[in-house]
Structures are given as C-alpha cells and as structure tokens.
Amino acid sequence: MTTVLKVLVIDDAIHIRRLIVRMLERAGIATLEANDGVEGLELVKAHKPDVVTCDIAMPFMDGYEFLAAIKADPDLRHIPVIIITALGQLEETIRATELGANACITKPFSSSYLLEVINAHVEQTIDTDAF
Image 1 (tube, rainbow, N blue to C red):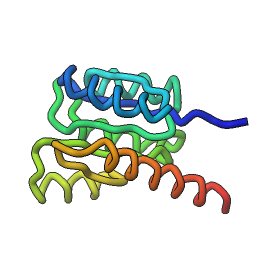
Image 2 (cartoon, helix red, strand yellow):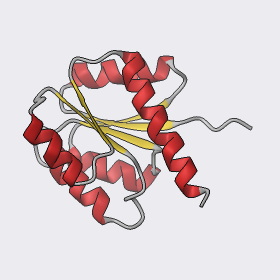
Image 3 (tube, one colour):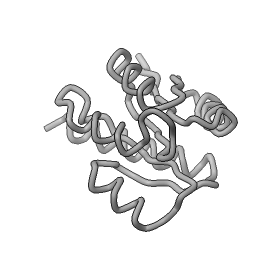
C-alpha cells in the first residue's frame, strides 16, 4: 500500500500559496492550506502533515513564531519545516535555521527544486525514525 505524502502550505499571499499547492498536487502530494501561522498551527496539530512549507512575513503569527511553536512541541518537532521566503537575506536564513527550520528556499524557485527539498527531508525523517 502506497502512502500519500501530505504537505501543509502556510502563506498569506493566496497566489503564492495556490501556486505551491498546484505544484505539489501535480506531483501527487496531498495538501493542506493555511493563511497564517495561527491557522497553520491548528492544522498541523489536527492533521500531522509529513512536511510544512511556511512563509516568514505573515500577519497574526509570522513564520518565525510558527517555527518556534512547532519545534517547542514534543508531538510536532519531528515534522520538517521548509521556510519559503522572498526576503532572501542571510540573517533571515540564519534565524530560521536557529529556530529549527530544516531548509530555507528563496522565492522564486522551481517546482522541481521544491519537490527535491521536500523529498530529501521526508527521506531523512524516515531514516531517523528507523533508529
């Protein structure tokens, strides 16, 4: 039996969020969508996705706050979080990494690169779970 990969996409820019969702769904990946970190945190707790992609600059709860919250929760900290940002500054990447981001991708990006990063972190999680 094949398990379908499930990715939560968090971005307040609906056009970016829909673009990422379409990329993932074309690759056969199931998706969940959230407009901000607050909604994203609710969805990650309820659905336990395999991977989360998250923007940094969002209202209510930004990507840093979301990342800190998920990595502080023992039931969720194992879920890989990939930060996708237009900021692209070294400081933002360092901060996200320090908070526990598994990867940082700068917009714009190709669908093949996004899928490569997602798959690498899912495989890494599977390998870690085996031990």
